Length: 178
Image (cartoon, rainbow, N blue to C red; front, side, top):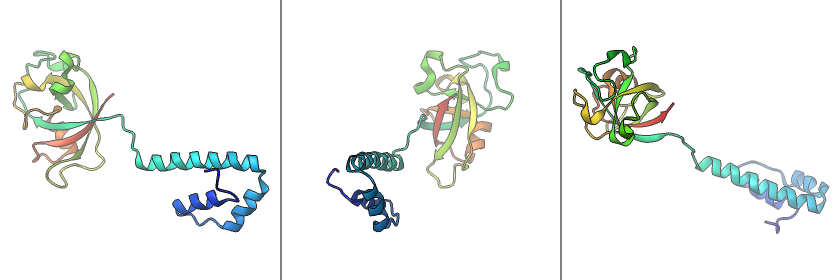
């Protein structure tokens, strides 16, 4: 990178990101800089360009990806709360934990934000919908059978319909504990 002189590196970078940098302006800027400052600015620009390009191609996510099915009543008794219906949220936004998040019962009461990201049938997910659910049961031992077994979580019908078309039996989800 030190082989670039008189603004050649800036011209190179601007051509990469499709900016129309004018070589005469760049040469004026680079000629106004002492040579040691020019090298520092080239290194700084190369670092900034690297960060810029990496930020375009790398997506950082703090969420887990899994699958969800749905289930309806009866919901009691649960593995978390037995026959205590007062533990269910009044919004009916709850779920049963799949084995991957059950954690020997530690999942009981946890809250998750969930959104549908895809499904086998097109236009199953409701775009932009994010819900918050509470874990009230273990999917493997629910009284009511889920629409599909072996999922990350089994959402109540109310929660499922808030993020996806109810006719689907399985959706891919992104979820994060809150």
